[in-house]
Amino acid sequence: MENPRYWRLKKQRYGLVGEVCPHCESKIFPPRDVCPECGSEARTEFTFSGKGKVYSYTVMRDAPAGYEQNAPYTVAIVALDEGPMVTAQLTDLGEEKVQIGMPVEMVTRKLREDVEKKGILVYGYKFRPVMRASN
Amino acid sequence: MSDIVIAGIGQIPVGEHYTIGLREMGVRALVQALHDSGDLKPDALYIGNLLSSMISHQSNLGALFTDYARLGGIESYTAEAAGASGAAALRLGVLAIRSGQANTVAVLGVEKWSDLVRSEAEAAIMQEMDYDYESIPGLTSTGQAGLIMQRYLNDYDLPPDALNGFAMLAHANGAHNPCSIFKNQVSPESYARSGMLCDPLNMYDGATYADGAAALVLTRRDLLPKNFPHPVIRVSGSAASSDSLSWHDRHEPMAFNAAARAVSSAAEHAGILPGQVSLFELDDPFSIYAALTLEACGLADRGKAWQMARDGEFAIHGRLPILTMGGCLARGNPIGAKGIYQVAEAVTQLRGAAGANQVTNARSALTLSLGGPASTAIAHVLERE
Ligand SMILES: [Zn+2]
Image: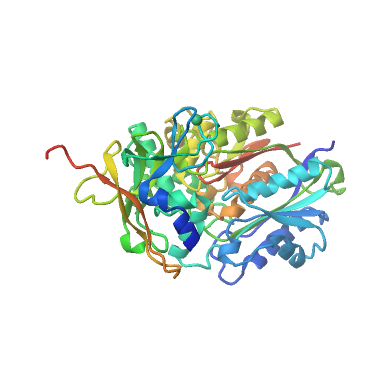
């Protein structure tokens, strides 16, 4: 990944920062400045809670270049509590079997090795199972 | 205005062509198609391709192929729409003739895949998704189809082998296609034993990416040479539609809305209903995409396409034959070229030249190419005079 691109997307990848539409209150991720619901301009920043539920998941066995060290790994679509869905790896699964509907929360982890030799290890959001209420 | 007809087709076998490169593959398909058309002289060449700039380090394919196929001086450039690139190039050709800008157009779909090792090639094709928000988290196109299949099986409470009917019918048909990679049959047992690619999607649910080149020659009906040796096949409908690039941005993730829109407007343009065609060359880079396409187009009830595939309704002699020459699952998936293979296969059916795979009395065909999970969808209707 190119240096300027890496820095440009930092807020999204580290902080799950999106937007909220001032007209219809829709929460937007990733930011796109045009509300996908009502079509109005939407440039107000909004930081997501990082909580959500698994909408679907799969296991990546043939990893693309840069991701081989983690393979096999689980990728999920997470429906965020505020509305939008994001694609992200699941982590810290331990013995837990992934299920649709499982509650998850955001953490920051290394995503990719420096395959392009640009001096950049890509970090960003992953999701882990929410700790059980037994505590 | 005169009708647009497909006068010539050409295709090289899909596979791993280590001894020939992008340009040789493309030129071979073009030369075949021009010869098949009775040596018509095109005044434009449109090319469908996705990966040449990454895998072959080659852009400006218009100049390359007009030069190497000795089509000197004509208008030529590439259309890119991920897996629908070939169909996009065809649509450019149809629009060029319909507008009066061209009389005869050559269309080439070409993809060189096999020059990279697997992990690098997987990384190259990731660019057809949302790079920042799907590819960077480590998802591939196959992984995306795994996510969609998982949700489909969950929503309809289906067993993991529910979709096996698609691989079985595709391989049954591909066995008789001289251009297909796979000639083997698939049984429920071999499907169940198959290794996982991206769970629950197994090796029979995901088409093998491969090299390929196929070409068409389009012309106006009144410009066909005297003694034209083939039945006349008209392009009677053409339409394209788009949906969100990212699958996670869909309100109805299981609805292939772009596929539904492209198919219904191409069919309306042709004045027929999608269910009335003799055959449907739909797009099956993954078996789940075939199921969702049939359901989106109203050709199967939601959550039921898998059952109809198992019941033989989409086989050569079934109610609506699909993937009649093996589709991506058995022919192989030549990515940006696949849209032209689909149309060449449909023309072969409509000419009555499909041999063991011939659909009885084939009069009309629907073709549909998808870029990503129906992020782009491009449909055509072909009819025999
Ligand atoms: Zn809004």
